[in-house]
Image (cartoon, rainbow, N blue to C red; front, side):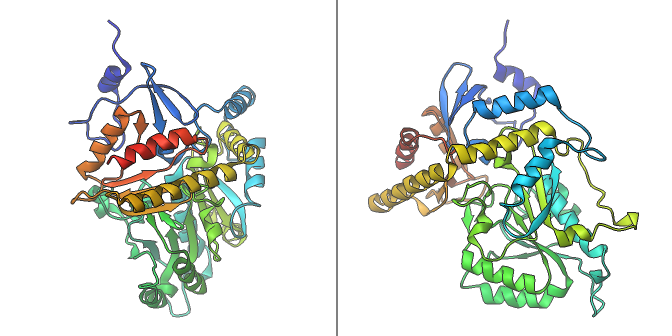
Length: 426
């Protein structure tokens, strides 16, 4: 007797973010095309969240698939310590001129969490590698600064700099101390700046999600206030780390969310849309000043960090192919179309007085809260909406009672209309 894929999965797989005691059987996806996912029976689902925010060009893009195939025949992998290869060098050469700020070196890793882990380690060791680790007042730059309601990944360093919520609570006693501040607003910015004055000389780095805190509830950050905060932080010679793992590659309307800001990062972290959502790859880019702090005759100043699949040639090739598509398929225009459609829907929400709270939009991201009394990641409303949407052939995965859209750029107007019609019924 041939068992279904979901049944076989039940006996062999442990899924992420899943309470298996009462979880519904996972839907077995057989293929993807464009903005659609197809299960084993052939039923289609509109992927309204880009499969955890990664698939920017849609599923099964033939150009990326062909480039991956051609590279796999040539060189599938090689150790990146003592060796290099064309896809890694070419990708770095293409990214550095378009990254925000004056970044000069690319460090490769495997995903968003490891890209952030690398950035934190770079910033901490930067100060240890220099005499400036200890200030004139004898204070050491040991403090790390982050925003409340942030999320930077599930490895221990990235958990330390994230909000101590449900994802992290079991491990909080094992994490290093971090100074958390509220996201800056016109109302609280002066208080935050005073705090930076008090801890600036002891702080090694500040990490932030530019303009949009995603997993924290799709919270928007005021760009003018964030710029004021970054200006103050830079005046204290604190390393600024932009976590653009989700916000990069036009997700917020510009190539990078940092492009909305005057102040640019000293380190930037990228993943998700980097490969068009096809392969696992992370990037941490740093300024020349940071890189030079690790160049020394003293071997102890080496950055001792790496991954088995660092700069995997196939993943780098997928990224190069994705960058090609951003140009040839006019991704900025597609993003602008989705922005316009989202704005029109928000106007409809306001005019019809639909039961949404705090409806907001940035680039291709649209979000709102339901009227459920209980919020938070475990709010039951999100599971109900997920189930109802799947029945209608739409894949949504609310963050508790925060419902959001983050579609691939290839989504059609007809597909968007189906999603909007479903949301109107909530």
